[in-house]
Length: 437
Length: 83
Image (cartoon, rainbow over all chains, first blue to last red; front, top):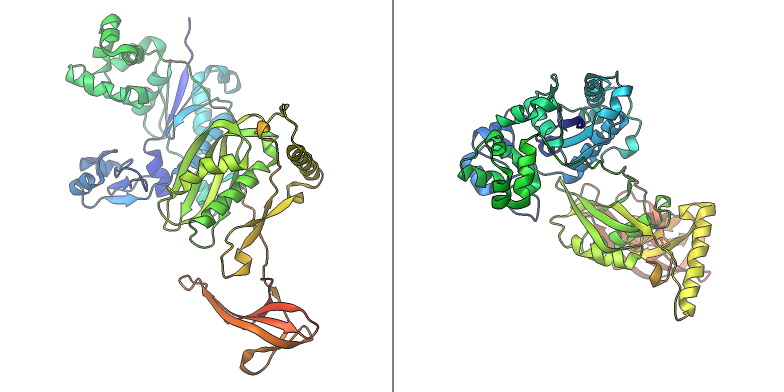
């Protein structure tokens, strides 16, 4: 059986590049991503000069600074990284690829189905990928057509175009891991490294077993292998599978498969349905004001047409700090819901984790649940029936006159000394019986 | 990313006010001020580049209306506002 050809698009230190705001080249000075606010005090991705001082990602901040006193810390920008990486995945989809990406900086897609539309061979697919990733660099002055979806921090078009150019490494192999290793061997903006299926085991054999860390489920394995004297993937591949299975279980068998150039099938991402809302907070808001802002965001998201009556499964709250940097927390609801009160309760706790004053707050739907279906009730409730009729009336009014047809007064900061800060008009949340939520 | 401006309620609207001695309103939109119930000063955002300073007056007009107006101490403009 002929295995598919997997292409890997690799942008090392992507989170650091995105936070620096200049993807052309990393600075020649030691730079590292600062610890995320409220998280463990460990540095994130580091630049090559910082690595020369012995600073590595995941090192404690104190140790990193003692090893390299000149280390420059850059505030992390998870929101920007996410937006930027989605741009990369969008570009891959534009040339017909179905990318899989578990973390920003590495994407994989199968090339077999794309040969026909890109010249008939793998070289055409890789060239199209390269053109797609580099197009913004050449057309820096062209207006951005989808500027509405550009990251919030992108200031002007030229700057935006600059931010959208990538120095990606391309590699291809018979499976995900082999393609990843091939991309690591490639140089930015140079010819991609292509590993044929018959050469995969030989190619991988020379590489260090530490590369297995690229798979989160195998993160601890390389250290154990190292202690056992297994330093390269070739040495791992030479071990009998029964012995590996007995010693390491399923992770060991997976590692063995990877060392032989085999891997699990790709799971391409589902096309995103971006439904998000953002509120600018004119003053550093906290406490009740933040809760009100969240309440309004929930109401706005629930009122969006794109929801099409579906419940919400997973949401992410994000904030941009006054002092720079961003923060993002994703939440998956225990059961999909369209009940604003339940969603508010689930997300309200996240606001307490906000580590510093925010200048804007955003809510994004990461996954929708099934449609909120009407269920029959054993006991007829007059109030519920009345709310349902009212909800239906609101839906019809919105259908006819748009989202702004039904609004309600929301007290944002009722104690404010300035009357215009006390209340705002927010979308009216349709009242639905509990069973529908 | 959708970013719609919030529709705030109670936003100030410009008003024609004639002020007398001490800057106290004596007429609003042609209606004479019968009495000033209360006046107070609000200062906010003094820590930003756009500080806010207002002098509020709660008025009773001779036609019986009870209204709140303020003078923007930054530019001298008068505004009416629902409390």
